[in-house]
Amino acid sequence: MDLGNGVNKAQQTDVSEQIEQRRKPTKAQAEEAVKVLLEWIGEDPLREGLHETPSRVVKAWSEYTVGYASDPVTILTKTFENPEGYSEAVVLRDISFVSHCEHHMAPITGFADVAYIPSGRVVGISKIARIVECFARRLQTQETMTAQIANCIHDNLMPIGTAVRTRATHACMTNRGVCKAGTLLTATAFRGEFENNLTLKSQFLSAQI
Ligand SMILES: [Zn+2]
Image (cartoon, rainbow, N blue to C red; front, top):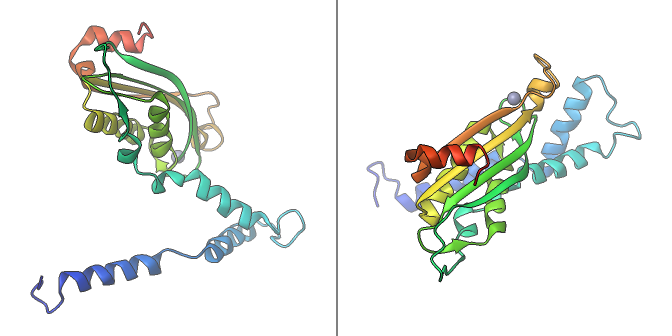
């Protein structure tokens, strides 16, 4: 397709990909950045205890953010028949997660409660935990992550209702800044029947279901 400036769409995509590739630093560059940070805090990155730290930090960050490489829609592709017509809420509580806040790159550590009311097929319960992992292992705000989990389940499983509650501590608030240890942030997201039915919502929030 001619875009009117002599560049066709295929060529433009090619250029975008090249820019994208240029922008992604190499592992060596990422390690160098960690070394600079160590120097900036007054450390000697060459001393024995630190000389492998940049490579460890880069490896750790690839684990903290592995969710970017995970496709949540694929996780929910495999579902099971529900021959007996189970139509009550399926509830998973206390799914642990560790995320990192997008403002300070500091840990957000907490638990997620997830519920859905199947409209037809059901999904393996480990897949719900995988969805939590997929969104947690990115740079996040807790509010965004909570909404993403609810939207993903609601849009892909198409249940009658979906509810998500996360409770977490933010190291950027407990270990720095205002330094309030133990402060818990709760975020909720309700879709479908959970949004409309106050009894159901309150049963979910008070752990009666
Ligand atoms: Zn933060």
